[in-house]
Length: 136
Image 1 (cartoon, one colour):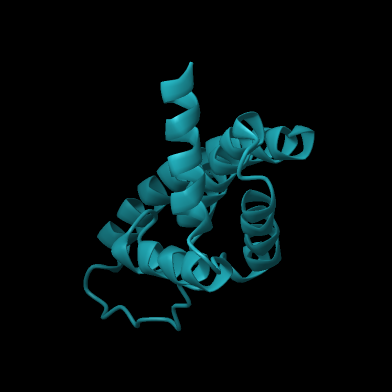
Image 2 (tube, one colour; image 1 turned 45 degrees about the horizontal axis):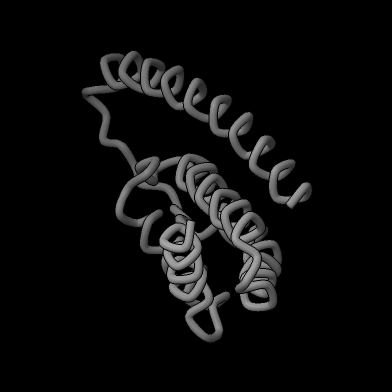
């Protein structure tokens, strides 16, 4: 749980930095668009999968943790919160030309998650948390 909390804190910090960066880059992009409006804009080689590749081992590890500790509600909560924060960071960390939190990025996240999940760990974790809530 401590590792998940630390990862969540780091992800939240990174997300705040990325949101500020996106706001600043959008303003610069609008300024450049005005200056370059007459020239055709060439599309660069966009790679929406780029921010997700480094996260794969971490997501695999977190899904394994869920699979191994289905009866530990606090740990499952921490793991799911960490996965959610990592998702937000990854969706905001897209390369130039890809819309932050856009459909391309979301599709890449779904692909990463599908590759990491072996036996429906996320659904099982959600059900375990639901049972824990009902029993309290």
